[in-house]
Amino acid sequence: MSNSQRTPNTATALITGANKGIGYETARRLGELGWHVFLGARDEVRGQEAAERLTAQGANVTFVPLDVTSDDSVAAAVEAVREHSDRLDVLVNNAGITGEQVGPMDQLITPEETLPQHLVPVLRVNVLGPVRVTHAFLPLLRAAEDPRVVMVSSGAGSLTVATDPERPESAVAHLMYPVSKAALNMLTVQYANGIPDVRFNLADPGFTATDLNHHQGTQTVTEGTDAIVAFATTSPGPTRQYSDRNGNVPW
Image (cartoon, rainbow, N blue to C red):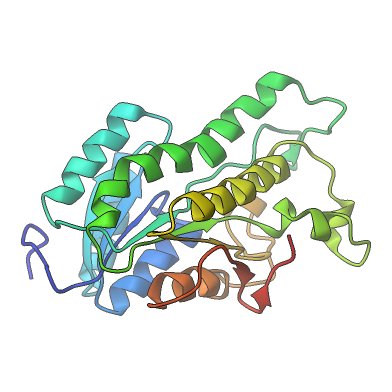
């Protein structure tokens, strides 16, 4: 089927930051299930290449240029999706960055070194991005029978995990990424509280080998997308949940 044709009976999903890593694997898996996947990416060359790879594997994938920090880009993405579908079943807010890194090992700067301007880019992508994209796509989501939004969070954003001496996250000390994910967690809860006709859930990929950790993670990208795919494909399903591939994550 041509990507230019509408697919009224096919489940649809938009994934932000989907040209690589967790986002790309999520797109691959949903495409494998027969979904029409809108692959969102800021870099048009890499995004188009990613979409073409998945299409070559038989998936129904449409590349959508999407910079989550730009109102104009997000508005254009809404119109691009409308060209193919009159609804959006699932929105996966996946795009994220860790923040400024220094040194030969690209270590995150310490809390002592962190200034307000270091947090701004991270919050712009990891927190304001999901707000911008979710707000813009709500009309298309509400046109679906069971609309759901999956926010890709992290155990690093859990206050319980970050203060548990048995967890490696408690040894981490940096202000950017964990703070942004903690904010995203509360944001998602408030969305779920305030928009009951759309399901909002948080998926924690866990310590997964991606560019964000220089592929040092102990899980594969497939394992890292288990919770995302579960929230996306379970219908009817829960709302206001925070889970990884093993079950609920403590707040």
